[in-house]
Length: 272
Image 1: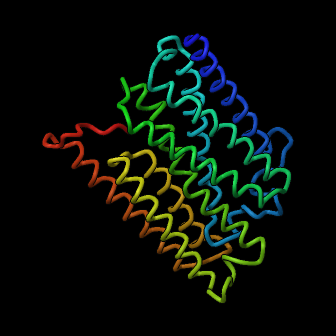
Image 2: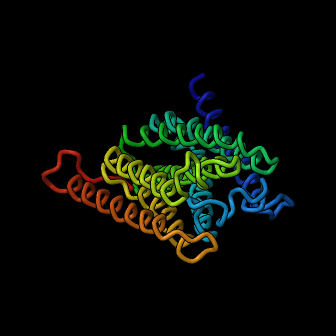
């Protein structure tokens, strides 16, 4: 009975990965759908809000999807069927894949407001998956890369994507990024970026210096800076805030990682 439930879990993860990849093709416009940056009236375009990253930032999805495919295949192997760590990770990862596809569909069908609770729930699921990776160590380098590394990248990117998504909804509704409460767009942008920076520091602290989530979050912040310095929606304060956040997050992450990996540390080496 236990073995059949394990095989069910593995199958659910694999099918969910296939569903998410199909959704990504639709979201890219390759399968006849509208590219995400053009859907919902362009609310998520690089020049739509002061928090929107430049277009090349979204290239990180290729790496994340490759990691998710690798994880879905790897966890399906017999060696992972009864593995306790994969038993805990399987369904949260599957849920994140389904929510990813649901988010793409909400944008494709111009349900921008619905995209916010979907991406917030996706973020919550990824936080839980990240916590589960912290609860036990990976068995080998392959697991470190395809499980811990992929979940970390996924979490970091969705963290900054959530901030951008919420801001897009507020701006589309005539609030937030353009004068909400009489506050200037630059101040709003700096405030939201500051929150993202705090989130990055908290992830670094809780993850004991794991590189993957910090790297993807900083990737998003760096492309926000590029968009604000070179795109049609210029904002020096937002660009400076984003770059400062990158420096702070990386400094905290590397410092904690070095301390956690030192011979005197009781925690030992830290996974990705």
